[in-house]
Image 1: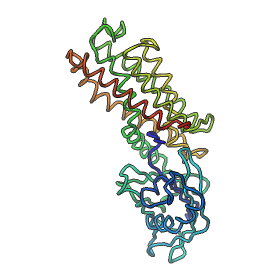
Image 2 (image 1 turned 90 degrees about the vertical axis):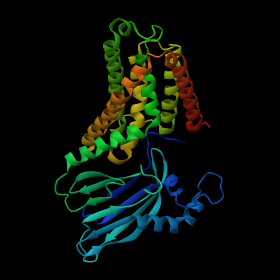
Image 3 (image 1 turned 135 degrees about the horizontal axis):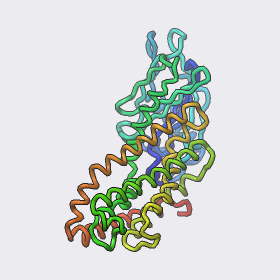
Image 4 (image 1 turned 180 degrees about the vertical axis):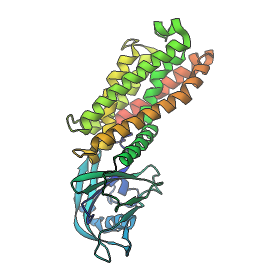
Length: 355
């Protein structure tokens, strides 16, 4: 299954000190580095996973470097098994962190999967004196200061998740295609595809109408993002991603044949509710039930909105300019809608649990 909203993430849980680590890595990510499915049946059995354990362990341990003023620390394996997150099965390993001087580590350097996937992230949850500090490790931020944990670092968490919200928006092709479908009607100058308010007020009316559509979408996915991340509502991620894929095709169809009516903001709000559950899969596995959740949610949601605004600022004027051309209206738009619809159907078949 392809989960465009759920990017490649590993989860690192550190206890007070820190003196212990639990690391969860998706089997699909490990498969990029080694052959886990030895019989090639596209399923990883318990026996195959046990056979791969030495290689998995070496790979994970080589990706982590804990250190303090006395030098690098060692990882002593304690437990090993599997865990389940919203997007599938993960290899889970628990370690004791042992430094040369017996003191806790002061820094962590993370180097896992970046060569294979530059969008991979290590999501860190650090428990310190009853409070949880969150951090995100990526290709440009591979190190984490473990000594400066006397303060929760909420502003740092906020900035980190703003950035991650932007990244997840820009790498979420399905979300970008859905936004494109929503704004296409506002870029056309024909009466057939515009709402009455757009026809009477020109570009200003189209901009106001588009702002309403994006606002409806924003409000909707903010609601479900919060509900899901707070564990108030939980839906199977496979079905969420399938409906997200389906929503793109239906939105494209509605541009040509308004089966849902011409009140596009209603369509945006309805499908936005579903897209919010997709975004929540990014945060829920790491942040559920912790004190920093509100900060992470606010930052991530703001990042998503900043990404949307950036796309609109860059793309909308270009499409409006093209909308004056008959070839754009009669040729390019139908081709775009047909292509988006085809991609949507492909994703539905690829993601649906029944296939």
